[in-house]
Image (cartoon, rainbow, N blue to C red; front, side):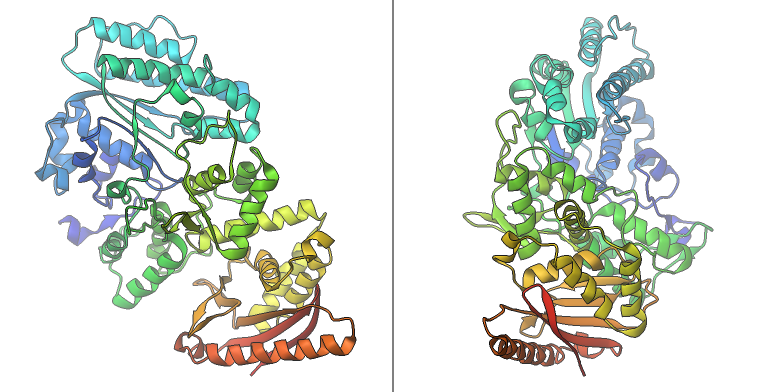
Length: 579
């Protein structure tokens, strides 16, 4: 039975290229990029977590490793590079480092993990190629590498070395989250990380290392080493490599059209309606990443696509959660980035992103923490982490949140910040019941009460520029934790944008959906002045809802309830359903 007849297994969580190819797992062909990469021998490529970096490294290892020459046809048949091989095919000793999985509870543990990772990789390298080498010094990562390379050079070997480094900054990012002082100790002259890369730099210069490819999330660790490692070309924002990792829309559509196997070895072929529905879910929640100002190609988070698809293929049911629990992009991650330096400035950046759904700035060429942490540096870090993506180019680029998943992370952070900043303790039970009441009865009084109560905790400073956008942010903070609804801020409808459109998630048990038009008026000195403003605002909101409902995407939702909510100051003064 052919693979097409049998169906492909879904490789969720798998990043071992050889195993995937030998066991009929789905593989999206990225081998055409090998030819492009070979124009630059030493490369750094950064992407957010769960974008397929480890699988790409594994594919390069299978292609370049001389030990894999005998199985080139088996591993690469049907892929682009099989018909268009380069002269470097299976022509290197491959030394691979993977710095993920290092325990990060304290600085000493991290350093022990770094040392052991290097030692194990070097031992594997010597054993795999049966090299007559004995490493003499296991005291530091740099000394291990130096001893290896000096002994290797004396062998006068037939092949040169290709170094592949996966998740280079996984543990240094953990150190950075724990404190700037320990981080700077690692990357300063004489620090263990800097010394490690200085050895690689020297051996690249001598020709012992002929090819080098490294992945990670942020450039901060290397940037802060300045001359510690400046021999590789960073292709992170180069247009021709913008879709080297992650899935394009064409690739996602091809996956949805492929025969797939579920965990019971049953072949599942999606029908046209299923493919259309799933693609829309994927586009809203996992797409939107544009990594280069030179490109127009947006990509999906590949791991989230496979996570969702695996669950759906198993039982033809949507997963309860849109977000893979293993993604680890959370409010805690954002908070760690904010806390590095210049906390108030960083918070203002986050607030601007949340309030306006975009921010203008430029990507920093280097983020050297020994010299500062500017507004553009922080934007650059958020971009590399996948919390921002390019929206528009110009004198200053404009950045935005890529999708609904990341939007939820921001609002979770804002909720946590509110808890700390305003000493506000949310009653989670009330929050859950308010969401249940929305779904079962189509009523928003309980969620609106929570919003109003929270607003009472704001300071006078916050009240100065208070408007509808702030009210909307608070609603979003309370609504985003639920898996029953997908919440849209500024949903496009006809010629306008709704304030809040709360639609059922694919796995929702809710009956009702909600549309809320928010209005805010300043209190006048006289009650009658305030009352007049409230009525004017209400009528305006009512008219806007009437316009929105001429949009078929909303008009055709039979259980959509519409409300206008008017705030005067921090208080709700009018709330009515529009029928």
